[in-house]
Length: 160
Length: 249
Image (tube, rainbow over all chains, first blue to last red; front, side, top):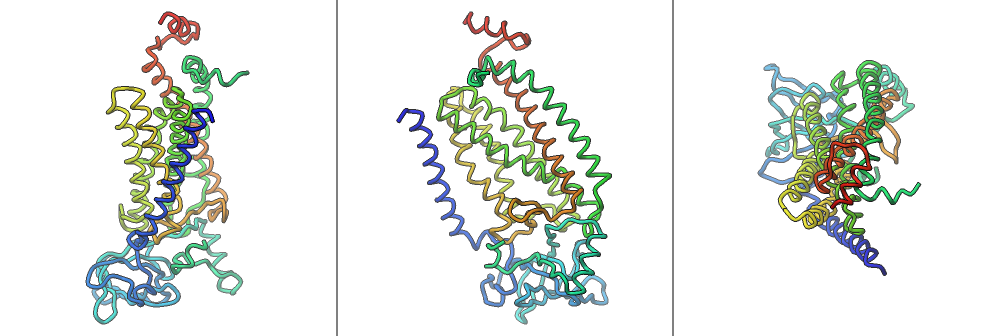
């Protein structure tokens, strides 16, 4: 082996070792790297208790209720498997809509309601003109096409 | 044509000078076309309205930030393997442009995040790993300037660049591996595109424009680096003068 072959082999080996180490470290920190918990995780007790965390999922269709003061809202976040009621007092982002993704930060109350201090809209990866969106909505209404959900329960996420 | 002769900085210097105008011209042309398409031809988005148009800068900038880091790491690796001065010079020339695109991606992302998510910044995996990429570029540049001996500076920053390359797949796959606020990829090799055709076209044109811009700027910068490090008379374009200078040394 020429010296430069040796050097390249050394660099290659170094990168492989580094890659393996990174994979192991990231696996170990898996739960810390998650930006939000899904309702299923919250119900099964995986979410931290007694301190603030984030939940994420779809805002269930028809679940958004606004109180008379105009600021306090109630809605249900779902990952299609479990549902979690959320209360929030404040201004919602423009893109916050029923049937769309949202992430809320706050604490789980004793009654099982999530009291949010901040609500963010989670945008999906679809970009299209309004006409195309209408056409897709029509197709969905006729049952021809199942729209792809943006927030996928964990576990199925790897298969994306 | 023997390409290996261009591995010598003295020979590469005039070649780079001849290539720059072409890449620069293509970059300007494509940027004009891409921005026109992005702002006037591409349709309004069904959810976000007009604010989505930031993607015509944001996505190409983010792609370039990752791509340039990999290219920089490859040059650094080649430099380490072959002990080639020009490779290290290329790595040195790429870093500032890569850092600029990283900063641009973060800035435009923040500008988009406020109207869309409701927050300028969140500490999710995608945003955090991209911020780390900016620090990596800064680290590569700082490490180089902090060591006086050029050979040691080259090698140290090359090792730094090579180690940091693990972050690139983390940035790219962060939206798949973890729950993030940042949405998944709209365009990917595996699943195709989830965008309207004109939007995608404008975005791809902007990507090629940024790519050509990067080549032009990096070639211009590597010429400066060559002049600086080889102590050549810079301002005379004729290769003969450079050869004379080299022979005179």
